[in-house]
Length: 330
Image 1 (cartoon, rainbow, N blue to C red):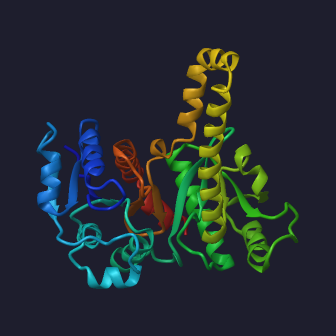
Image 2: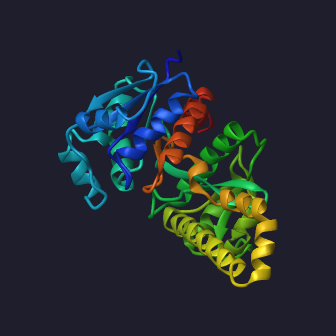
Image 3: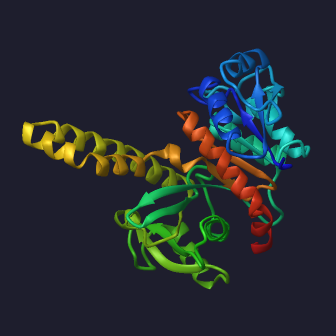
């Protein structure tokens, strides 16, 4: 059996612990590594009893407290030392786990990961990288939620870390990097992006292709899309909401009259593929790039399929030694 141990926050997210446990069980049937379910032991074991699984692959680590979504991150991490999030992060710090996944409080996860696990030497800020669907497949959006107030040199580091991730996880040689801006011209934008534009163009090891307007994000011409977390998170949430709305509109119109219903039946398989294209559950989670070990933020509404995807993503990340490759890049 693999030496990899994935610690999973069994109490984090809207559907914990039921969907978290189910996702762990499903993943355990496909991978050789071990999964540590961190949370209130009685609650987690009650869910595990519903399934048949290899007991050599899944074990429970008790944590009596839970960090809720509404809590202040710094206060929660400091006061709730026996929370599932803090216990799981400490497992990674102490070498008891290779990675940690949580669908819980994003701010608390970032704060805890930075304080407990720490940054790779030379990395000024870790960044949240998430894959988003485009016409050509998938592109990495970084930063999608970690650094609302950024500096130009942070964006350069995000570009380097994102390039390492895309090149090694998705096999894209020399990934094209675009800086999200309000225009393609180098003089466009605020002080942050204008200075970052110059730094990105001068930096070795970055295939910088210039500014990227929001309307062109979905075209997929850029493999890595760089922004501060304020812009990046707005883009991410807009894409999620727009995709959901468009699917709803299409469904509504296809059911509007008998002829449309016939067309919908004929094109049923195509519409299923389109729906799958926008399904976050197939994308796993979003890694915090720049930490000394892997920490993954899963969607707050993650179901078992999303949890399974996040676990599989962790195994690939670890096997391809992304942390050390980022350290070498920087």
